Each structure stands twice: as structure tokens, then as C-alpha cells.
Image (cartoon, rainbow, N blue to C red; front, side, top):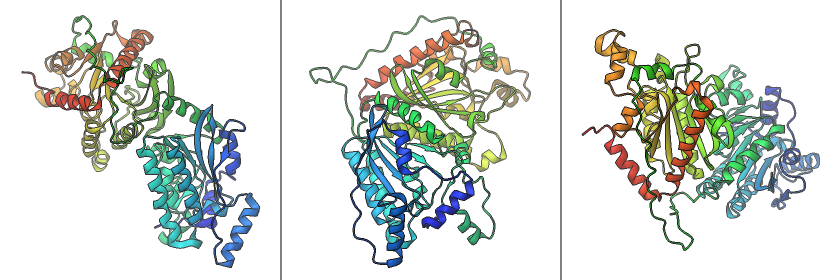
Length: 531
């Protein structure tokens, strides 16, 4: 059902946000593209509708906006990089989608796919055009099918949701971007507030459909003003361009030498000389130091390019998401921002859903996924049980295990419980020298085994939770030393870890996909086998 209809519903949604009159399609494109680079793709719409009232409404909309439909399409350059654009015009019947509008959008998406261009959609719409009824409503399927084909071709599809984006537009092509950006204060939702009140008899809470609310729940990747969108798009395209075109889904490209012959599988890097195994209980305490570098600091110190994305809970949440260039390679990163005694960050079911979404995007774009583990554990609460935290952990495991792109896990510090396990399925695991992995923190294990917390140190030492022990039994592939503690040498430690990450990504990238997936399956078949 679509109830965000036409100009009336769009005007209602716009005024409810208090965000003011949106930029026109031409104004927004002018903010985004390099001067003089935009080339329009639009052809005149088909025959006018028979209904005289609707025909008059279209005529007035054309006179008011200077456009012949509620969308403007074409291609331009952003920072010198070509990109296709689909920009809605709210002044044209509230940006509503009729059959002619849908056909124009569909053709633009198909052309972008044929020309191998990244596509940026800029919707602002009250939803389906009610004057055209079911025919217009069903055209959302036409647009969605074209978007799906574009993504299946391994091409970037980015969306910027403007105020308002409602109804079938929000429930289809508006939110299908591999990365979804949004205008500050924008009303984004399925059901218009006036219709909600009419149907339910109560007002819709004002913050439910706000862009910032959706970003806090992991449904929007970044909230950014229009004036800053160009730079965000430029950096995003620059990162994605370092990978070259992604192979379409279901295809495998083997690395070849200059003569076109398959390259031999690379020899594994020589392991560093073993060092003395740190005391496990001492390591546990070191990973809890408040000044120890976490995921955000690691990224800021090691990424050549970095676009931080929103995650559930925002900066106060437990998850960090980013598009980055590490070791010269574009990657998507999901990492746990470690907890401090002053600020608990439970790893939630929403975080896990965001991990899975990021993993799927990595696969669509043909990018490696880097996971960073540093958590005292998943959220433990009645609400977490109702949110299905255990089910989300299980789905995270299956998603990462089945991912066709390379997966590199970094055990950065604390690795406790299912919250850590959910991010560990990988082709290769790198660990910091004091990192550890256990079913529970040592205090919790002591409470189970001894019915008190007094044996935590003993259990930490006997359970084999430290990074060196994990490497000895094959659970970790490489240990990056701390000298003596990452907190005492954050710059040098992050540099060493960044170098290890880059080397590992190089090794994974040069391995043919079938071989890498077979090795991943064998790796996980053998995990925990101490014989």
C-alpha cells in the first residue's frame, strides 16, 4: 500500500519537518557536478493524459518549474569522475512518480548500467502519483528491477534522501543504495503523517520519520547537508575508483600475468620470529586501558582515504562503519569501538544487522570486508533477548562465512563472547599482541566454574585466550607485537598493524576466488581442533 500521494501528501510531509523549501533539482545538481559538465538525458514525455484536470495540473507544474516531468536525469563529473544522476523535483506535483516519471528514471538507470557509470539518485517525493492509480504504483517495480540490475553488474548505486522522501519511493529505489545518505531533518518514511492520523486516530510522533532517527538505527549511512554532499560523493567515488570496475555478481576473475596466464598462488609471508607469550591476565587488563587505540583511531592513523558512515547509536554506539583505502585497496570496515569503564557500549542486535548489511554491500561492490573485534560482549538485557540478539549473531556468522569477497578479521583487543564471534569468520585473522578471545570475560568464567570472581586470573591463564596461544593452535594467522603496550606507542603500533592489514589484503586479492572460498571452508572446518 502507498499512501504518500501526490503534491498534497508531499507538501504535508515537507511542512512537518520544518526544514523549509528544498533545493530544486537543477540547484542540487549545480552544487554537485563540476561546472559545465552536466549533460541531460531526458526526452519529452509521451502523450498527455486524457483527464482535463490532471492535464491542467501538469501544465501548471511545467510552467512553475521549467521541467516537463518530476525528475531530471543525465550525467556529469564530480571531482573529474563521471557519474549518472537522477534528481527529483519537488515543485512538480510534490515529486510524485507517474508512469512517465518512472519510465524516465528506468531509462536513466539502464543507460548508467550500459555505460558502466556509478549512479547517484536524489529523490524527494510524496510517493506515487494518485491521479494515475495502480499503473503508477506498480511502476515502482520497474524502477527497482533496473536498480537491481545495476547493482548486480557490480556498479555503485548511491542515494541521497531529501525532505521529504515518502511512500513507494522510500520503500523501493530511494533506499536501495549501497550507501544511503540523507538531508538533515528530512522526513523519511512510508506513511504520511496526515494519513497516519486519519487511519490510526493519533498523531505520528514527530521524530519517528526523521533522518537522524533512521541514522541512529543504522538505516541511513550518513546525514549530510546538501552543501557538503559534493565532497562526500567525491571521496566515495575516489575510494571506489581505486578498485576498478567490480565484476558482476556470480563471475570470477582470476589474476593473470602480462601474457594472460593465471598467476601462481602467492607464497605465504614468512612469520615473524616468535616472542615471549604475554601473561593472559595482564593482557586482559591492558586491553581495558582507556587510552588504548580503538577502531576509530586505527582507521584515522592507517587509512589513506576514509569516509566514516553512521551506525546504530551514532558516536556513542558500539559499531564503527567506514569506507576506506587501506594498504592501497578500497575496503568496507565494520569494527567494534571498545568500551571503557566510564562509557559502556553494548553490542546490540541493531549493530549486528548493520554488520550484515555492510557485508552485503561489500559483496555487491566487490570490495574486501575488514572486521575489527574489540568488545566486552554482546548486549545482555531483556530487550536484547526480545530483539533477537542470539539470532542476529547466528545470521552474522552465516553471512560472513558465505561472503564471496575477501574477509579479513582484526582482533584488536577484547574478544568476549558472541559479540566477538560474530565478526570473526574470515579468510585470515590478525591479532594485536595483547588481544584475547574467550566465551566470557575471565570474571564471568570464574563465576560459572568457581561460583565467584576470585579465580579470573587463573582461568585467563589456563583457558588459552591470549593472542600468542591462539596463533599456536591455528585460530590466529599473525600476531602484531605491542612494545610493550599499544597504549604506550599508539602511532607506531597502528603503523605496524596497518602494514600487516595491507599485506594480508594483497595476499587475499591475488588468490582466485574458488581457491580462497575453499580455503575458508577448510579453515573453519579445522578451527578448535587441537589434535
